[in-house]
Image 1 (cartoon, rainbow over the protein chains, first blue to last red):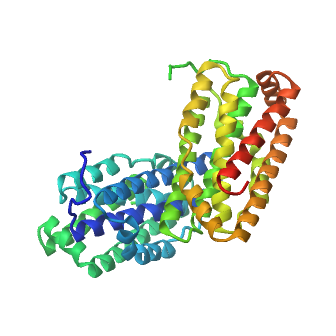
Image 2: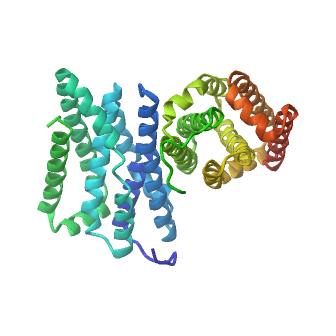
Amino acid sequence: MREVSSQESVSAGVVDLLGVLAYGELSAFDRMAEDARTAPTLAGRAALASMAAAEIGHYTMLERHLAERGVDVEEAMAPFIGHIDDFHMSTAPKSWLESLVKAYVGDGLAADLYREVATWLDEPTKELVLAVLSDTGHSAFAEREVAQAIAADSTVRDRLALWGRRLLGEALTQAQYVVAERDGLAELIVTGTGDLSGIAGLLRRLQQKHHKRMQSLGLG
Amino acid sequence: MREVSSQESVSAGVVDLLGVLAYGELSAFDRMAEDARTAPTLAGRAALASMAAAEIGHYTMLERHLAERGVDVEEAMAPFIGHIDDFHMSTAPKSWLESLVKAYVGDGLAADLYREVATWLDEPTKELVLAVLSDTGHSAFAEREVAQAIAADSTVRDRLALWGRRLLGEALTQAQYVVAERDGLAELIVTGTGDLSGIAGLLRRLQQKHHKRMQSLGLG
């Protein structure tokens, strides 16, 4: 990535976007690291810990990008802490399988979101977002474990399917609050997606990809 | 690192050594990730989370090295879980500063230990240990924070100095149990350090380096 001066300006919308992504990564680390301790096996514990570690790698990239532009990551994250913490509180996993589905679904949703927003951004920010995106995909373990568990027990399957729906619902609820509160972010999305119906289209695409992901987990 | 066949033999002592290091890294991740949630600032939370993430990077390197030699990391770690968990239980930090000192001291002790053991090992294992070692040193934040806190309050200084001594004592206690129980590991150390007095010399060097580290923290 090229050198930039700290004077390089960055719009309020981009600061918001990188701030919400950064706190998303930091809090995902937190929750996955906590959930890792409930793993029934050391392999599971290490796998979820590795997913958590990847989130911190992403966080660090976002932090550095903001710092190079004279923006403090803590300030950028501050407006989003409440909603993201609310999301995690309302979706605290009650079992190891719920933890895995949450990690898998969260990782997938994040990747889809990064892929969408990349197209709206200036070149260096786009490079950043694509670099973060290329490091996702640590969730093969989660996929494998969940597939095995539901193959063995169809009531587990039904419960996890409901859980997946709840995760998406809670994520979209909090996302809507965030966009409603942050003008810069809303403007970035409207400009990026074309218009107000563009936002609806974005949400629809994220939902469709979520449903596909649930299907490939055997939970569709 | 060169390709190796899964038939490449690895001594019981080396399996033990890599196993104890691997579980040390995995459990350090756990504890640091948990302690990160008690951080008074987002910067502190991110800093300790980054230290935790580095441990998982080390764990992954050790796991891969063992797997290439047909050794399952879970089996290699199993004999050491009890003692390492005991260490963490007996040294659960009661404050953010205790967490930071523990992270700093633990990181430093681990680096010293890796540096010592590297000289005993066959070439590919030595390369592995040096690669892990070169990735330590994420603890500058801890050093800075602790230095600030004790500059401001000398009772904090005294309490943390005691805490540092306790950490070393508990670590050496558990280390001695481990060596006493594992013949292969004991043999590796005796061969590596020269003789039984070599073990004593190793422990002395680790203690001396610990004291130096405490001094540079202002806790000596």
